[in-house]
Structures are given as structure tokens and as C-alpha cells.
Length: 363
Ligand SMILES: *Cc1c(COP(=O)(O)O)cnc(C)c1O
Image (tube, rainbow, N blue to C red):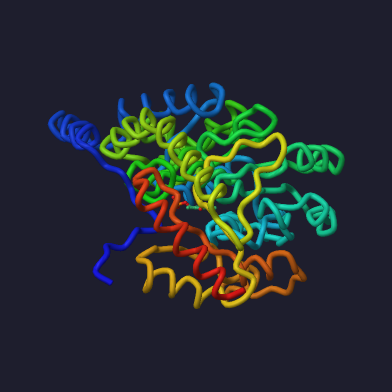
């Protein structure tokens, strides 16, 4: 059709990020140093109400080290959603514990407390919801359940920088929470992750594990990893953190436009008490989702994504039985449309035109 494709996601890297990288490279100090320390304290102040933050080299490392720092290990079960990116359950398995999969709420796509309660056992050590697509999980119900049953609460906030639940930011509820800084997330450091910690003990443990188990050089206290963030990556992340509020506002405006104009498809719902940061704008296409996505690309030049097509418990890497009907339906029906802050008004209109026409043709 000769029109350019609207991408499903688009990292925004500008002159300020390039200048920041240049400044670090010119300093000759490239590995973890003052930029990482500044990024940690700025992220803490901006996004998690001042909780101590520890930067690592990926979101997956952040989950893995957070779990280990909180004392999770062999014999423990951690309840996670099956409808998420595999890193959620992978990190539980890498910590030596067992991921146990529960179902999601049909409107928010986040972990459903009633389903979690059904899979709790005497081995359950923690519940780890995912704030999927940038929408917070129901932290009131999950906190009540965790306290009542004496288990811990962690957060996979990889997709939800700045989202809030009952006025409090995600990342301020769990014993630890992880934010991903991968390029397609709401902000990036290239690769990276940030761990928000409820206690200085957990923060110290994450710092030890990130750096070979050392606080003081060559006095290794525990067996650790090299999961450090570099100052180059932190310098990018610091610039992106300053741009995040405007980007989030643009994502919201884009989502509002789509919801006001889309017709004939199920549009996303924001739960009472939640603010959504629209990492994804996800509709449901009950019949023929994959053909719908192909036609949207071929006929209208609109990219889209299916997050996620296979429930994690059914992946070859896990392959365990679980009866999760809401998850199964979501995997078959969800389609995420572009909502990122680089969209133009023409892009938004083309998305609406394409989706509405295809929905009408399918009806
Ligand atoms: C991206 C993501 C991760 C992993 O983060 P990386 O920075 O890619 O390692 C974990 N959980 C969820 C839900 C994610 O979307």
C-alpha cells in the first residue's frame, strides 16, 4: 500500500541521551559508579516514594536477585500469573523455588486473588503479581490475602513505571519490586532493571548479590553474581526518567483517543482505584485474532502484538498442568495496538480506521 508501518513499540532516544553517554565515556569511568548511584536515588524519589532502589543489568536479574535477597529458595512455592512474560516464572525457578500458576482477572489481565487463594499450600512463601500492560494488580486484595495467610508479597512492575493503586505507586507494596528498563518498556537504560526494596536488609542483599557477594572489595561474604549496571546505561536511564512523566501523559492521551473512537471491539478497562500507564493498549478479538492482526498490518500498515500467546505453564520450559480458563481465553483473544508516545494524530486515526473496518467486516 506504500504507506509506512506504524510500529507496535518505539524506543525514543534523543540528543540528551547521546550527550549523557558521551559525558560518561569521556570521563573514562564506565562501569558502575556515580551515575548508577544518582540514577538509584532519582528513581527512588520519582517513582517509589523514596524507597531504597538498587540498579542491576536487567529486569530478569532484578527479579532473580530480589527473590534471593528476600530468602526465597528450594522448597518454597511462589504464586505467579501464567499470563505474563516468561521472566516472571523463570526468576522463581532460577532462585531454586517452584512457580505455581494462578489465574487472572478477565478485565484487568492481572493476578486474581481468589484464584491465588485456591493454589496456596503450606509451602507457599510468596505471591508475585505482575502489573501487566501498565495496569496495577489489585494490591488491596492481594495484601489482605498475603497477611491473612502469612505469605509475602513481591511485585513484577516491569511494565508499570508510575502506575498507582489507591494513590500509592506500584513498587511500594511488595517486600521488593522490579522495574525493567528494556528498550520497549515505558523508559529504558538500554538494558537494565531497578529493584525497589522495603527494607535496608533486602537492599543490602541485592547489592551483595549484584557484585560477587562483596560490600568491601575482596571480602566476599556470600556467593554472588556480576549483575551490575554500567554508568553508561545509568546515564541513559537518568535522562529517560526526566522524560517519563510527559511520555506517560502522552500514552494516556493516546489510550483515551483510542477508547473514545474504537467500535466493535472490547476496549481496555481501568479498575476503580487504579491509574494505568498504558505500556500496552490491549483489545480483545474473540474470533480470528491472528488473521485480524495480519490484515491490520497488510491493509492499514498498523503493527500490533500478541502479549502473550501461550500460557507460561504450557511452555516447554515449564510444562505443568493448571486449569486457568481466563488465562486461556486471554491468550487466544488479546491484541495490543500501538499506544506509544511517538504516535502522531494521523497514526491514531489510521489505527482507529483499520480496527473499526476489520471489526465491522468480521461481525
Ligand atoms: C520485560 C519483562 C521482564 C524482564 O525484564 P528484562 O529487563 O527484559 O529482563 C519481566 N517481567 C515482565 C512482566 C516483563 O514484561
